[in-house]
Length: 414
Image (cartoon, rainbow, N blue to C red; front, side, top):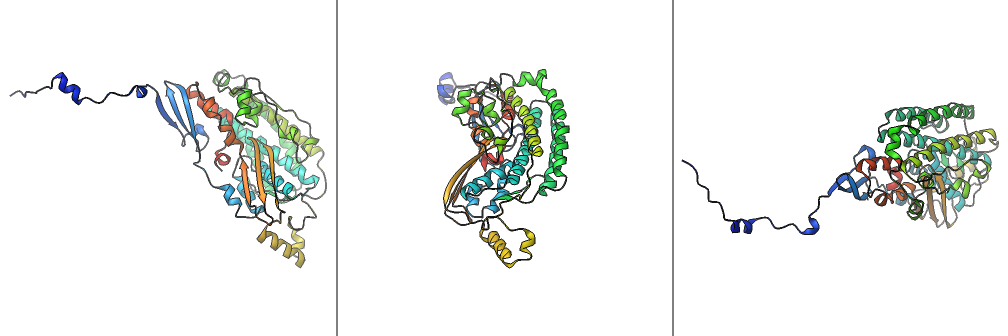
């Protein structure tokens, strides 16, 4: 027996139909979350994208997944105890982070470090710059499909890590710098091994760059993509290679030299159009210039002490005196328990790190613990331009843009 259906008439169907969608919601755009678990976001960055087809119409960066409260932690430990936390900012260049923080505290204490200490810091900072740029270059190549570049970059970076381990005892998070100096002097023969690394690295660097510079696929993925104008780069507070890629020749090592950088000759590479390709070229040339600085440091490496010799309330005494002198033992005990005695005041110092300008603002009320500490992290400031830079590009070009900006979420979130 056939079943009979009573279909409602058109009026009844209209009465029970879904309500009409308002005009402002009638769109074909799609919202897409890119990250925080995505290889091309280089960490826990999340981009909330709005897409019209494959074209990005808006991008909203969502930060804070890696927030650890470093600035508040600094207010509850001595100045030297905070050094390992600076390792975890741009963890690809811990030696450069240590240096920037130590110089800020030393300027607050009006403490001059000897020439040998300055030379060691410049040497290690430039080695860290090469190491960080190698990782950024390899990751950028991988993002746009050049797998071989990463393998070559990691091999050269491994050679630097062996040198870091000989000097500091650690490969990754070195904690090498101290307020008023460094942990220890360079080991015997180490400077020669650094020079040997430079001699073999430059030809290898040229081989690595050859894989990308005239590569048709890489050029198509980067030239004219993610253009950041000079005006926008300045307005959004970009620094480092991202700013210089847009044609602004700002480098604190030349414009506000510190730690003896004024003694060394080097060039500041700049781009012309501010696209992903320019930012790649700038970082490649910066590695050549870092080798140039390292060779000058090695050629005129000074003798003398490697930490301030007369800052009794700030710098730890030599180990042999701690073991043989009661006064030196007490001094070391007070430094470890109470921290370096820094006078009241405030200071802001910024250094030219691989990612850009890393700044420390420190307020002291006296004693061994900072009252306030604020970090100006370059990755955080550089990422502020993403909503503007992503507008109008394809979703695949977002990957190239992120790779060309070479950020680290460790210092972005702090």
